[in-house]
Image (cartoon, rainbow, N blue to C red; front, side, top):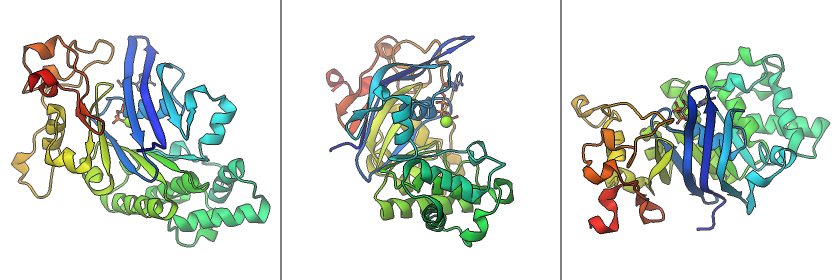
Length: 323
Ligand SMILES: Nc1ncnc2c1ncn2[C@@H]1O[C@H](COP(=O)(O)OP(=O)(O)OP(=O)(O)O)[C@@H](O)[C@H]1O
Ligand SMILES: [Mg+2]
């Protein structure tokens, strides 16, 4: 696979009053051109911090300690702030959970989309306005001429998310990073937005990195999955494998905790225990305190990712010597 994006050993620490939070710990992942890849895991496992570190948008308390973020042959961690601004919103689009934090409440929708376009494209004036209109049409906003004159508060949550997607795709990025793009929306709107993303992927050929805790979305919209636990990738697999034969006990627990409509409600179980504190993560396997399959060595030995690239798990049950 020739990767479009290849993250290698990314490690981000947050320096806080309570200590150093090891939010992203030696994370590696890859996305091929046009591929839809999911990054899943419980709240606080480091999904957003991974994406923000990749895009160099992590909060001031964050420090990238190690790693490379290769995107189209360049290491993004080595680019100047100015070069990075060209990548973001140009070749790499972003969609976040809460559109209101990214839309300026005082600026009309049309001007906000147009501004994003003029940052990255040569078009100005009438030509830029036409591109804006096209971007709004592409995200299936009815009556885009009128919507261009609206302020964000005049739109519903679903419409605002469409505007954010319009901004993200206006420059036809080769990678779209979507961090919980539908969590704030109700279920019907959620499906509309996900279908829209799927359509755009087909139309523009963009790859998608979808960050979510919703395995239902993963099953329906993605090709491959990385499962994160406590700042680390614990499993990587195809979507088919992750559901048919999950390798890591954490992945199995995550699947059991997902309420599925085709199963009786009593099959639903939450994962016992709390995710670990990332200031003092447990020794050995980070999942061992909650793992129903843990044995003595899991408390002391840190597992590697065992298996082959694209089909492996960070679990001693899969270590070659265990076989
Ligand atoms: N600004 C911050 N300052 C200090 N710690 C932070 C900050 N943002 C996140 N963290 C910590 O970093 C870790 C990773 O957080 P992150 O936001 O990446 O999780 P997540 O997987 O995206 O969770 P969610 O599903 O809730 O969005 C968590 O332990 C969190 O408490
Ligand atoms: Mg998050």
